Length: 439
Ligand SMILES: Cc1ncc(COP(=O)(O)O)c(C=O)c1O
Image (cartoon, rainbow, N blue to C red; front, side):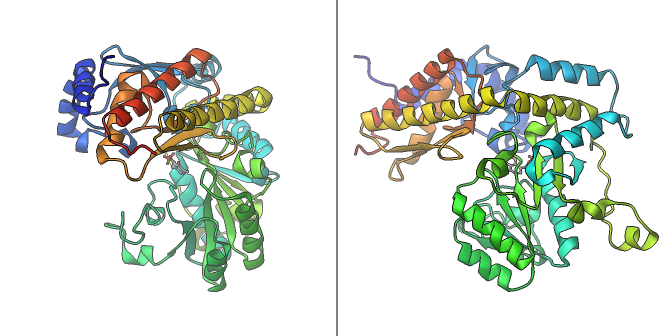
């Protein structure tokens, strides 16, 4: 029996297979801090540089092929280059972004209004990305309530906006705070997930404008229902960040999946069909602050904002197509997406059990995962995660570092088998090299 590779063997194999990526990384490091412009794309010994993506696969500069589990950071629910989205974009390309109103943007907003529960009979305001949507939702919530404080959850991710960065990671209040003024941090109340008593204590201060709940986070159905009750009771705006869960958990997002309608939804990713996009959607009573009215209102109440790329035709044309396909083909798309998530997480858990090592695989929502993540044994060596990452990439599996990524409903049986083979190899490597304890 050939012995399984050591970490150093894996690294050598990786470097051999990715020599052009290594060269590009040397060049990139000189001009981009640590060579990247998205934290998730940073990897050791260096990131892989891609040249092409089609369907469920990506190809790198060295000609290696991968089954992809990044899926455009979640936006590519349809895999890459779906011909229908591509056709919509090509049609839109005939005209540049004109910085003007178009009929297309009305159709795009009407589609959101029709499909996202909290948008029913309401307004939609377009912007360029999910993080902007979160920021704009909080701004109108503050205008609406006349209050400043916001409640967010420990470990949440709502984009790059400084107020929401406060929830980044433990120890809370210390991590990722540099550069965020104290006055801003003081506006943020952090609560753990699934502890309604902490939320109520915050609401009781009477200073809270809104609470943000990340649609794709580890909360329970009971918790989200309680949040709806508490926000109604205390007059706090309930903002659901559906940037990932929108059109991914179900057509109408996590709010439809759980049957709990928030006040506002912040949307992104799929609503742009693979191109940059964001939106805030909700009742007119709250989004009315964007209306132009009399002089006083416009100067002293209305948030004055532009947005060069708002309603950029490429994104909204592809977004209309994407949302309509989600709606028309929902019976085909979502059961398959969930089935894939369940199969892959079960496979990982079963393989780990078979090898007598501890790896906890899961995804969200827990009963029907639309992504996959795997946590190694807390007693594993720090090298274990690196060995897993190298093994996966050497064997044609591409996600963020390790096993953590978004799925599409388009994987073929062959894709899934290849993925499961890569999982087994990665777990065997950490077992064989004694990087994780046996249990
Ligand atoms: C839950 C969630 N909210 C907000 C954002 C920010 O979206 P964007 O990167 O489009 O600004 C992200 C991005 O990944 C996200 O995952």
